[in-house]
Image (cartoon, rainbow, N blue to C red):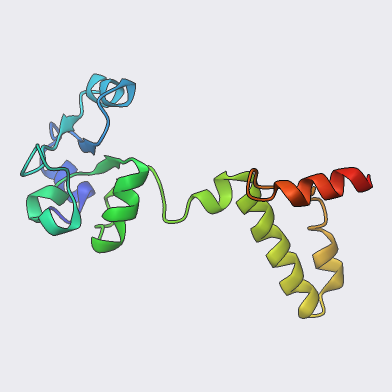
Amino acid sequence: VNTSFHKRKRKDPKTRIRFRTTFRNVVYDALKSRGWRESIPSSPSDPATPSHLNRHDLDWDIMWADREWMREVFDTIHLEPHQKVNHYRNYYELTRKDMMAKNIKRYRRMLSRRGDKEQAAKFNFIPQTYALPREYSIFVDRFKRT
């Protein structure tokens, strides 16, 4: 794996960005239309799973991954500084409304426990949220009270 995209780019200005994706849809088409070069896995029939990874499987600059790849592979590899992935670990903690609310409330409680009530009050804007159907009974109970 080339450790520096910038060094590689300076050596050969014609070098194209190498990408890997688990999709064969508009994402794939967009990456190809930019003139980027697809980095083919060593075993095309078997996507890069942790037990099948080799050095060539990490020979890319951009990985446009699905959730399964993030869960199965991301924590088992070391990314070089030039390598980018379209997700990050535990992205759903911010992208799901119920998880974001949970984390902001947790942060607010932490600030309160530290005695920083003024700062904690700034995070008092999250409405009550429910993860249905799991919290349906709580939702119904609160709905009846209001």
